[in-house]
Image 1 (cartoon, rainbow, N blue to C red):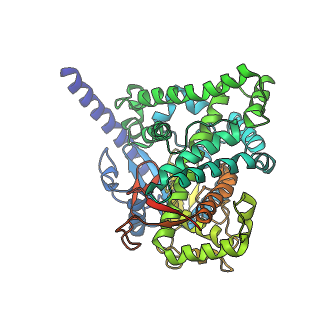
Image 2 (tube, rainbow, N blue to C red; image 1 turned 90 degrees about the vertical axis):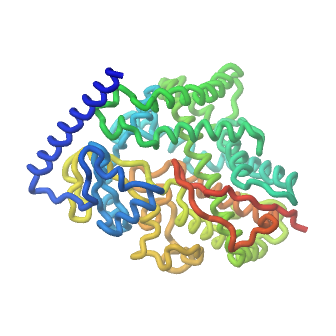
Image 3 (cartoon, rainbow, N blue to C red; image 1 turned 60 degrees about the vertical axis):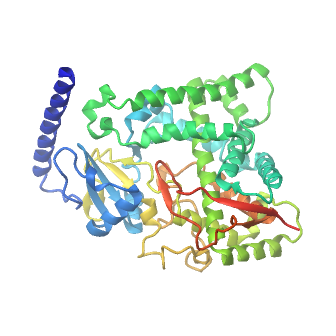
Length: 496
């Protein structure tokens, strides 16, 4: 007990000294104009202001303090960007200076940050090398075209699962996640990981989500950086165990391919060839597979679930999508990815679902590595985290008419028809923007519309008995990603 009290008082004393010295540094920097924000409390800063869903809370505070806002998170500083115009200035004028990551301590487990393109700064040659490998061998137009058949077969597997359960209630997100969990590794590694709808799919999902949750969880090591060596909450140790478990699965895939000496002409073969030439290290190989696997599955599956939920909530919009499908495809038995090009209204539905319900409403924090960053007339202190509230930006009332409503037609008018997923239209950034734009964007923009179109083409969809469209609950649950608070349950009915 005495040791614990001593540690508590020592922590308090050092924190207080650090806090007072930071006040002196700010006071001595009179030339800079720091962003406004809520008044911080000593030591804890603005942590008590951040109750509830973080993206909602930050949006509410931004309405009071402005689209460029400063928060104190313990002893660290965060600058929050919440409008289209502020995001444009940040990404067009300061992209290079903001292209590093604010790395949570839990992500440092197993030295993962040193070999992951998610966390390495863009100035690091290793980041450029890994990003180049992924761009050339995974998400290039040629690579995506080569894997199209594998992706389409996995969508057919999903449809077969739903046909087997037609007429009864299904957990839409559960089913879609199982299908996507196979789609990603099948397209890149030529294997299935789980059976669609099986509990093993949810077990693997929980493992990945456990890692993401530990990284996103408030951590005293991040709020008071001098405490990092102690790992007081044990989050780094816990994440390390989870990393090792899922790395074991991925290493098994790699070792199995090496042992069989079979070739499939897929991404894994390309990686193994690069490894044999000394261009990719063995531990980087596992990290690349994890980055693709973890980032790709959730993004696709959750977006499909949100799109289906909005369509069931808005039967008139679903009817318009069906009309488009029948007009463009007629009696075609199955839909191919290339058919999506003839379905502009369906693509608008997907864009609108991403605008209203981005999977990552708060983009992974950037880091101001240098002085000289100024956004909206305010100085961003060197060493600050820079947080882009994509949820607030994509509901910016200065840009979007009736921003809270689900209106796919907004993406068909002349002004927004050319707004795409690539982050160059800063009012629509579901995949981020600039150098840290999500590399999996090009696959998601093919796969998500294809799955939604296939679900609507193959089945009539009804809500469970006793649930009306008006009663369908679309409230959000935000932990690490933005999901439905109540998982979507619906009845797929075979079309006659």
